[in-house]
Image (cartoon, rainbow, N blue to C red; front, top):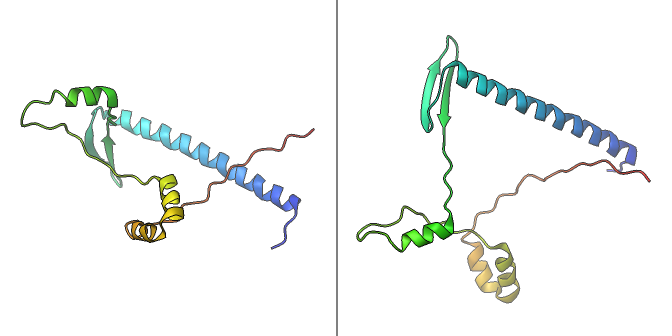
Length: 134
């Protein structure tokens, strides 16, 4: 498809407007969520509660994100009482750079690794900025 720079600018203008509307809608949503939370006096630190209106039901869920401070955690894990273990899980993640190196060095092993992976194409990221004029 042939396109002109004028057409591109017009499409980018529509995209910028859509993004602004999206940001406004997000702010309104967050304000409404806070308003409803205060209205029903939901004050749990963690857990959920359901509230029923006449035509609608809302379930509010409070979560606490806990992140391990690795240095402190490792020091404490050395002092774990006998018969007890630290409450931890290991998560394997893919090292993309190492995978690329294996692909170059050992195709057979690379093909075995690929069989252990699922792939899903991600959404294409789009970033728009104005061109600075001289």
